[in-house]
Amino acid sequence: LFSTLIVRSTSPVFARTHTDVKPVVQLKAFLLASKSLTADFKQVAINEAGHPTQTSFGVFYLQRPGKFRWNYLKPFKQEIVSNAGKVWFYDTDLEQVTVKKVDESLGSIPALLLSGDVSLEDNYTMEDQGVDGDMQWTKLTPKSQDSSFKYVLIGFNKQTLAGMELSDNFGQLTRIYFSNVLLNPPLKPTLFDFVAPKGVDVFGD
Image 1 (cartoon, rainbow, N blue to C red):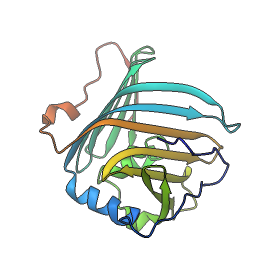
Image 2 (image 1 turned 90 degrees about the vertical axis):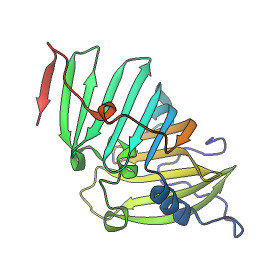
Image 3 (image 1 turned 135 degrees about the horizontal axis):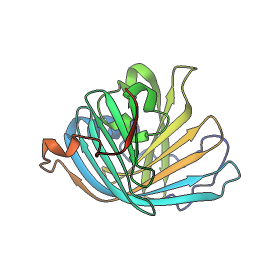
């Protein structure tokens, strides 16, 4: 995954193919078919010089429309939960919860684009980016000039969600590698409820 992707200040260009399903079509089909999803993830933050600054591991849960949970397990425990138009960021070490509206959180959570809370066609230009290794890529570019990020890449491997990359306006890249993806598993609704633990500081809505 991302084995041949070179860090650039602009979006990478991948090899084209005429035999595979177009990535944009694949993305739309995936969003229609995926009512729920679970996956392990590895997230890598990369600075503007192209150097990794932090690598995190955890588990991702998605329930469309509008619900997801990121459980960061290593190196630090964190929870990000989206439900009912809001996103809760819980840092266990800092004992702090920050609450934001969904549209205020897009620049920091690429998975919001998969949640169904955001209309992709209304808000983003979607382009086929071709193939990199075994993966097919779609590029989403915000139509609004006020967006906090430049683009998001969404990658599939054999119709399975496999990776995402977000580039913000400060030259930072966030790459997410998905593994052990399970499509449409039964998930308990309470998985996406968030109640701030006693004693933690809560900021925001």
